[in-house]
Image (cartoon, rainbow, N blue to C red):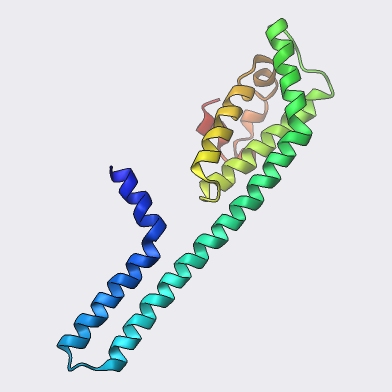
Length: 169
């Protein structure tokens, strides 16, 4: 219930601000000598704050969309086939080792994951998309051949924005 109210308030916060400033303006108008200029100033203030909030939300959505498309395209074109191939090979042979061609791709994938995590920590990745990406990261980065290869990278904690700690790898 609380989560639903929070989501509702977040979605309509600009309208609540207009309503609150309108009510405040009306009360000030009634109790302070009915000065119309004051009422108009208070309403203008509320509308400008509400407009700023709406614009900020629109800009955040645009940025999320750009990041979402960019990361999904990059994953689909560069990593999906390779990661699935590694997964298939490890399921057939648990002792499978990455090929020389796969090793840099795995590091590139790790960098992609770290970038996505960085944007997530900045609040730019929608939680539903992030949860899906996180499950994928945990799945692929825990495949034995991949996990073995990225062990050296774990020493470079600052290079990956803390993703190893976050994913508990």
